[in-house]
Length: 129
Image (cartoon, rainbow, N blue to C red):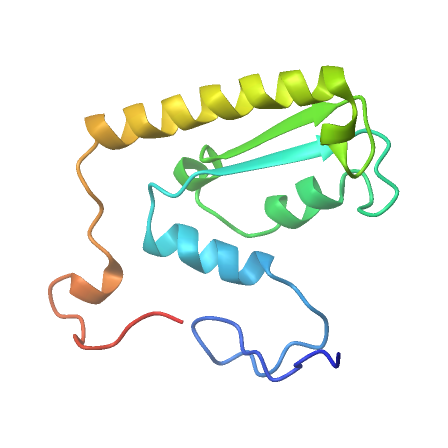
């Protein structure tokens, strides 16, 4: 499989990406939907994803502080396939259930966001990439 280098960052003006970076797309999605929540599950002994790589990428998305609060990290004494450790799997299930409950509770108590494309004066009929 050959990587498709033609992907352009949301918002345009940046040209093609010279390395795969989905954090740019995630940041655009979080700005479009300020209620989008992200939970990053991390294994301390992960040899496939560099430790602190996730924090570094998500921390450099240039999000406003209110949106940074929508990022949550959890850590487990396991490797890349955290769920293979029975204790970590139990903790992960608990953490996911708590995260889902908090996200649903926040959504029920909040006013739905107005996407930038529907705000006054915005061009309509266009969808974000």
